[in-house]
Image 1 (cartoon, rainbow, N blue to C red):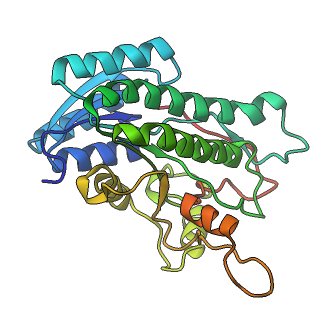
Image 2 (image 1 turned 180 degrees about the vertical axis):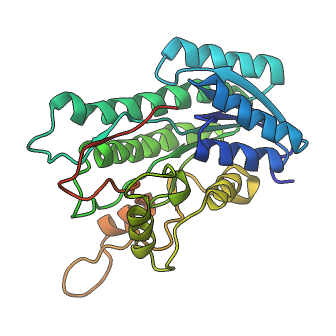
Length: 292
């Protein structure tokens, strides 16, 4: 098994994507420590892992609370002996469907603040333990891509861009300590869209239509990619974004009439890009994310 005897923390572990990642980690032998704000969802995921023969613990933690995050990681290491993988996926509290010229400052900056704060706090807390171990993997569900022209995404894409910058900075500082830092980019996972949502089918079709493969990433795809990123099979990968968008995001930048890729363009290719689930069509009601 790829993650045998590893201890993996999953923030947002009670949600659809966090749960899929947690189950995939457990399937590959990791002991999973689920963290999130809603106890019910965490326990449901933990029970599904245990019923399949895996190991899972749960803790109610707000990833935006500095002291709570540090207490949680300390407790994980105390009871399990190590912290080998930290995966973070928490809601941003974003508002979409409003033009930047009309959106309030609070609604614009909230997702940027929440995304960076949660990623920083969870990564920093994990890294302090991983540095003593001289090993570890920090994963975040983020990335960025060019905003869809037909949508008003508020601070959502800006938040992803900030996360990518933080990913690169963390990788630079933590690499000498044997710690890898990666993000996952999907272009949107249709299975996470609530059943019964009026525009669910339209969003699902749009996500698939943006890809080269004619299909979007599934929850299983996300879990498998996270396992690969956390395993020794990816031991030489860091500071990168894993692109599982089905081709909806393409990493290439041409410079000048020669068609050659510039050094700056190459750097952007290496850095990786991503895109979140698009909101309703422009002109519709604003949408707000729901916390875990």
